[in-house]
Length: 137
Image (cartoon, rainbow, N blue to C red):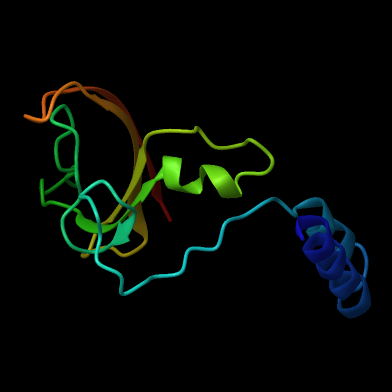
């Protein structure tokens, strides 16, 4: 299926886009996962989701903008273990959570955080580490 989709994409680019732009686009093709929202009830706070409140690790503070210290708005959390079956090229970590935040005042400013948490008990004690990546356009 993946090879078939990639082949169809390459054929469409070759047919519709002139060189050298078409060649550049073909070089940029990378594996992707399409996320489709569902109305199903989440089984856990740690499931992937859009909106609501994120399941942040205890060690991670809610991201804030630097100048006014205003909190970023939460957009989504992606549980990487849920994507593992789709990662045919082994490019994603097999566990951890991606969190997506954005600045509502400056919509071109966003933050992507990666956290790996290990739950040690039902009481919710966690051992975690996290990293944040931001971008401003």
